[in-house]
Structures are given as C-alpha cells and as structure tokens.
Image: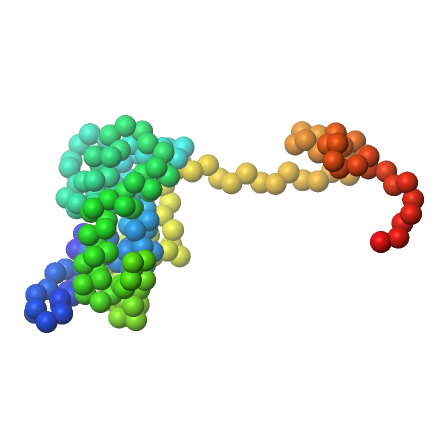
Length: 187
C-alpha cells in the first residue's frame, strides 16, 4: 500500500511515496513496523498467528521488502517475540529508519521523531485511507495471537488454596513467620 503524500528529499527535488511502514516507523519505531507487517500479512491470509506463533503460508509472494523478510523468516512456526526481536533489526526495517532520518523526520541513534516527523504523522492520522493498526493507540489484533492475560484469583476469607495461598496461619514459608502474634503490639 502506498501513501498519497510525497516526501521531498532535501535539496534533490526527488520524491518517493510514503508507505504504510514509513508511517508505522514514525508512529512506533522498528518494533511497530514488524507488528504492522504481521497484521498486514495476517489480514491478507499470507500469515497465520496462533498461540503467539507466527507462520507464513504458501501462496502469493508479498511485494514490500519488510513483508518479504517476514515471509522468509517465518517459513516454520516461530514465536512472535523472536520474530519481533530479529526483524526489527533486519536491514529492511533499518533502511526505513535511515530514509526517514535523511528526510529529517527522525533523528539520532534511537531514531526519535523530530517536530517535522510529528507534523507528518498527525497528517497521516487524518487520512481515512491509512490503516488503523499503523498507529500505536490502535494496537494490532491478531486472531488467537496471544492468549488473554490471566485474571488475578479472587481472595477468599480462608485463602485461595488452588493458587498456593493457604490462608491465615497456614503459611509453609519458613521466612514468613507463624501467622500468630506473641504479643508486644508496639510498632
């Protein structure tokens, strides 16, 4: 997907369309580029995400370099955290950061967004054609990607033995005391 704005490379008069991954980098850095690629490929049916495992399926070859790198890396089921760690440091994702730095939209080794980058990101957020998940406050959602966080067990008056809480006075930890006071009461 190509973005409608065109960036003018300083002093050269050259332009290049800004794509969804350029905007994703501005919105959340290299990791967000990877998350956006996972979401894009998942929505196109080229990538399956299940139980925090990512696996590319055979079929149509992606066109964008970041997507091709993802497809090559995820030929076999791979943990999503591994995919993020490796691909955010890939040459394809790093090239996006370098180009944005040349254009003055990010700066420094950490690729922090500049005021010009902020302005362009704000413009991108107003464009209805830009994919929602590119922006951090609209985080990507993948079907079955990560199990929902476990709820904390409810505290019961007698303890919650199912989760290791034996209740008042029944601690088995030698460092926790007996659960009973021998008096004194002063603090």
